[in-house]
Amino acid sequence: MSAVRKLKPKPQPKVFHAAILVTRAEECWVEAENAEEAQALLAAGHGHHAALGERVHVEVEELFED
Image (cartoon, rainbow, N blue to C red; front, side):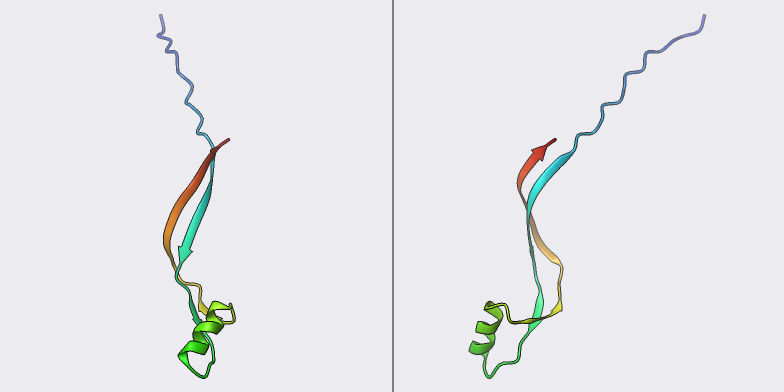
């Protein structure tokens, strides 16, 4: 007699989606007359990107299950 084993089906992995907050350091530059003007220009988004930088912080805000 042959032994018949009942194989349990492997549970399928679930799909999860998330809202993630990612903070990264960027390198930018501006031309300005002084540091205060440079800071104001950068804060207003008038800087030129030198490099996008790396992620420095990742935080999952919300997790959704399919």
